[in-house]
Every structure is written in structure tokens, then in C-alpha cells.
Length: 280
Image (cartoon, rainbow, N blue to C red):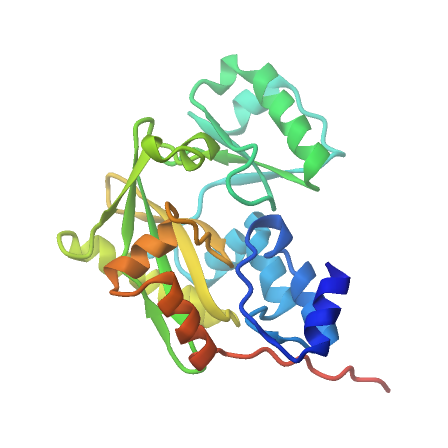
């Protein structure tokens, strides 16, 4: 990867980075791009690292917005030094829980347990598998409600929220199983018939995107509870752009294609410039 980026830098090419997940969003490739002086859409390495860290990003959103505007799920961070057993897990939260990696993408190793008191062995096994692939796991309360997603296009002076999409699944959970099979979920544009929810989600997305130095595009995921409370789930620094992915569906509703987006990014790109080191 370093050799490929070095070759691109020598050609003075402009790069639109669409490499998502742990390979393109954790700050690593952003750091390499900054050190090599690459022109493109990589953005700030520190911001990429923040958004990939689900626990840290939720803490940031919690400090930015009051809970009556946007709440975050109760969450426990688990590392390899923590000793867990089934009894501890059962007493962590009331009701169902979600177990997920702190900084892997695509909902890998993410699952909901509706009866944690009787699923202690399975939960501990999943946490152990997560810790083989990530530095931390999350034990999180399962928030009942409907899942929504809102993407944004960001230039040097504006944040433009895209149409909000509702994610419908049979089991009320958008995990790896659902994401890997198109027949297990469907997307519904809600701007036209649910103005209050759409407006609240767009407002939250705009505020979060404006509060940190995000570059070009981003997608935020939320849960809306039966009482219409908006709950922040995570930030996707580089949204997936596959034919069945959520962001292209938002673009289509907005009257754009992925090709149009790339053209827009090249014309309106907000470039990241690494500051010189201060040495005294």
C-alpha cells in the first residue's frame, strides 16, 4: 500500500478515496497520504481515527448534543484485561444487549442477544473473538426502535444532508447477516412522509458533521425509538458505495449517481493540509 501511494504521489494524481472499513477509515491511510503529500479526499487522520472508534465517537456526540436532542446507548468498553463471566454480562444492562467491535467496519462480529442472562457463554465467546481482531469490544444496551441513516456532502463552507433512509429488517436489527444479503433488508426514503423525524435526523447530522473536520462525504446511523427519541449509533467516515449500499440510494433520491458524486467531490473537495510541526 505504501509503495502504491508513493507511486501515485510521484504522478501528482488526485485521489478519491473510497476504501471503507478498517482499511480506509481508521486514520492509517489518511496519515500515509498526509506524510506523502497526496492530493485527494483522505482528510484529517485524527478525525478518521475518532469516527472509527465507536466508543470515542459516541462520547463526542454525547458531549456535543443534549440527550433530549440526540441520545447515545449505554455502553461498556471491554478490553483484554477485563475478566468477564456470564453473571457480569447478565447484570450489565436490563434487557437485550448488542455486542460489537469498537473499531471494525461493516458490522463484522456484531450481534444482538435478546436474553443475555441465558446467553452468557455465547456472549463471552463473541467478545473473545472480537478481541482477537480488535483492541476493544463494546457491550451495549439494545435500543428498540427503527433504524435510519443520513448521509452528508461536505464542501469548504457547507454541509448538505442527503435524503434520510429508513432501514427495514425482519428482526429489527441491521447486523452483518442483513448487510451481506440484500433480501434481508430494504431501504425506504422517509423525507416525503415523515417530516419531523427526517428533520430531526438531518439537523443532528448537520450539527455533528459541522463540529468536526469531516471532508467531502459522511454517513450517520441512528435509531428512533417508539417515543420519537433520536439515538446516535455510529459515524461512517467513508460510506460503502456498492450497488446495494445505503449511500448510493440516498444519492439517487437526491438526483445523483456515484459518478456524479465523484465529479462533485473533485470540483468541491475540501482539502486537508497537514500543519507543520512546532519545535522549540
